[in-house]
Image (cartoon, rainbow, N blue to C red):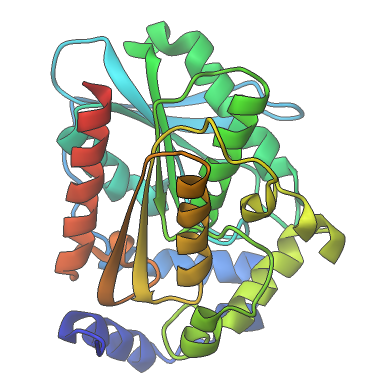
Length: 309
């Protein structure tokens, strides 16, 4: 179907700003420019408690933000990784998403500020992501969480990290995860799918920008063949937690996200895949102006709540 009116309006508004493509900027400049996109996010909802903490990492402390809903503890937990191609993005960029999921799913959301590239190349983000999920499982009681009900989630590059963490948690036998929520995840280093050919330009996230992200994230193309960078290349996808995979129609990452879901299904994993037609990559973070963003958050919250009960 064609782009819906709300999505087209966003693209028109962004075009009128006259900003250069992120891939024409240095990473620091790109981070500053990307922060302006917060205007499209929905108004942050109040939650019962928000706490910033630092947890021990392999080389430096990792900032996390803990969102606690109203209700009776212990609460189930969603560990969430922000998007941004492993180069941009922050806790603030997904603040509204995390608040909404905490309230609607009735769970604690732990948002993780992993190290960014190119200052910290692959696998630094993966190391931080797994360290965070391990810390959450071991310290859940310290923030009223239930260590037996932990899910993982993320958007775009964060969806990549969530998928990789699920694989690592299975392979290392800790922690046991209940669910994974992957919003338009990057699952493979490569740019030759039909969705790249169909949607690789004109829809905000471009193939050129993805090449730029991967270039900064990886030390070499060979790293892209590592399943910790490209979970779609993992040899065995069995015995992973059930998954919700949400993709938009006009997204160069659409096909690899859906291919990951199909591979999970073939491996015997319970998967729900929903494609939101007529919209673009990042739409969940545009819930201020996109009805579909709010719908996708509600879908994820219902799925989490159902899995946690």
